[in-house]
Length: 133
Image (cartoon, rainbow, N blue to C red):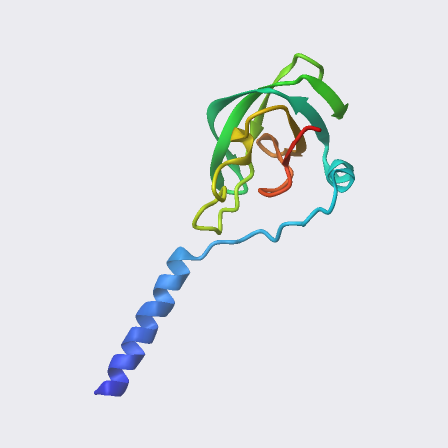
């Protein structure tokens, strides 16, 4: 009887894991802003960021923002242009943005952006936003 109970528990556990499994990205860990800029499609400076709902990034409803571009270091955007940016999240974490979304930092920011299927998004959850020096 005990053996049958163990088998039932294993079958239930196996069926539940199939319902909750998801793909998790393996993120590049960048050593410098030069490395980030090399891999980014767009690099801008901004000090004007406003929340703008969500954006689907890699199957996850990530925070989205309206960003007014103060300076362009790379890419096909213009100074004073308003762009919509998705904040890439670590959707396999209990806290997808860590202690807080990096787009919500104060001060002038340098954004390293990738052109994704749904628009511009930060390069990774950890390396897409840096304080501008």
